[in-house]
Structure formats: structure tokens, C-alpha cells
Image (cartoon, rainbow, N blue to C red):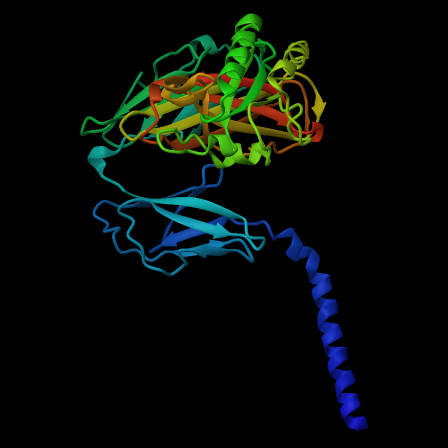
Length: 443
């Protein structure tokens, strides 16, 4: 009996020791519980280029490669899983989507695209150099950013451009250009197809001309909300009164009154639902996120004073947005530059939103269903998640510049001629308060 007791105590001691080790490891496990990234994607010695911001992986294969039966080897975050799994054969004739699941159950979806090079169809900018300064090329968004030293005169710069073999570029390499504003370059392949790159030159410490403080009104609405049309009209009248360049409206369809039913449109988005945060009625508003994250929102008659007050605030960031939209593929590339106008501390984030204007559809009104109602500024989703993307630093000095690149394939149902980008910077340390917003048409 004593022997059994001793064995039992030994087992307990071993178990206790194991638990003690687990406790020591626990902080590391907790630190990784939200990690869900593809770290490496390799097929037949071809290593894919992983763009973490856009969640796109590109595999470059030589001409003639059969991509219909490829078996990738995939390295992902510790403790995460991936579906389809590493080592499972896939047909990459069309893009393949992989879902990485973190230990806490959250997910990230990556699009993996196999590109088989065809010399006749090659049309890329390989390098872009101005006065020995190498430009940063983002192939996904078809943008080039060149950061020149302080004092550079950008009105007559001469770039040296290298493009794909056999391709041509216009304007030509060696031709002087005025880069006061972004310049478009068209690369033409041997087969006549083209790709357009947008080149932006930024001067370190250069003079910044602020465009002025802007205010973002998020109008939480729904096609089956009888009071929402009047609320939307009120907000648009306020916008006209205070200035359309400085008051921006985004219509976020969320809640049960936005649920599609019969011929009513489906404008629901995952991000809009997350922002709505389980409120039970529409219309509701936020002004630069004020009265949004505290669990409350504003009724329409309450927005006048917050909008007027926000317009009086000092502008702290200048945001420039350079879209690059390809009609044929419906691929939208976006280059965003954010410049701090003053020194600040904060938890700064940027969110890039896609909005579509002038959509005709069914809307409930006090007099019945309007079957030709014109929906304005409809939020279609983000390019970088509901919370956006964090800046690399929590302190910025005046003239500090941050660059972001995003890409998205436009849904076939969207009218590209009516699509806009709404990009805003907010401070998580101030309850997600939006500091500045800018708007840009995608074409």
C-alpha cells in the first residue's frame, strides 16, 4: 500500500513539474494565439512573393510551366493551421484561396496566384531611378514611390527606367518630367497589351500644403428602414451647408433593417456589421467615430454641433491617395501617403474603404416602397480590415511620412465609374477618434 502511495506521489510530482513547465511557456503561447500568416510559399523551388498587406502570394514560373498540378510547401505561423493543407496538390490555373486559422480561431484569407511568364506579354517596370535614388515598385498596385532628398526641385526630374525585355514605356526613360503631381507611365508589351504605373515623388522635409480638416459622418442605415431616407437627406443638406470638400458621408448598411429581403438590395458587409456593434435600430450616426465606440451613436438631429466642432479642430495629417484601376481585370491598386503635420503621440491606424455612389434600388419610405430610390455613398467594404492597419510607430514628428499599398479586385456588380476610396487615419488611444479623411475616385 505504501508503495502505491509513493508511486502516486511521484506521478503527481511529475505532473506538477510538467504543469510548471507549461506555465513558463504559457506567455509565449498567449503571444502567438492571434498569429495567422503565411511565412513562406514554395512550389518546385519557386518561392512565392508574399504581400502581407494585401494577403496576396504570387508565384513566378517560366514560360511553358503547367500550373494545373502543383504541390506547394507552405510555412505558416506557429500554432496556426491552413486549409487547404501544405503538401496537397492544387490547380493554379486560376487563383487559389488559402485560409490560415490562428490558435484563437480568428482567420486570414490569402489569394495565391501562379504567373507563367510569356515574353510577348511581359509589361513590368523593373526599376525606376532618379538621381541614383531607387524607386519602390509595388507590382500589386502598379505604383512607384521615389523619396528624394530635401530641397529637390521636382519640376524637371529625369528618370532612368528599366522595363521587361521587348517592352516599351511612355513617357520614355531619360525624358524629363514634372513630378509636382503623380505621373502615369504606360508599359506596352510585345503583343500590344499595356500596364499603367503611377509614379509619385516625395521630397523629404518638403513644404506641405494642407487641404484642410475633414469630418467623416458614418450613417448607419438600411433599405428597409422607413426613417432612414429623411435622415440621409438631413446629413446631405448639412454637408452642402458646411462644404462638400470638408464633410464626408459614408452610408453603412447594417442591422436587421439592412437585411436583404425580396427585391431589397444587399449592402451588408462584415466590417459594417462590426462597426455597428449590435445596435438594434437605424438610423444612427457617428461623427469622426465620436459616440461610436462607447456603445452609443447619435441621432440625426444631434450631429450638427459635433460636425461644426470637428471642423474647428487642427488638421494633424495630410492624406494623399493614388488609385490605379485596370478596366480589363477590374484590379484596383492603391498607393496611400500619410504625412504628419505636427508632432504627436498616439496609436495611429489607417483604414481604406471602398464606396459606391448612385445605386438605384428598393427603399422603404413613409409613403411606401420607392423602387427607384438612389442610394448615396454606399460602403462596400475595406481594403485592409475593419480596424485598418497600424502605423509602425506611436510617435510622429512633423513631416514624418508613412506609405501604404493595397489592392482589391472590384466586384463585377460594382459600377467602377461611381466608386470612390475613402481613407481615414484614427487614433486608437483616443477611442478610435478619426483625425483626417480623404476621398478619391478610383478612375
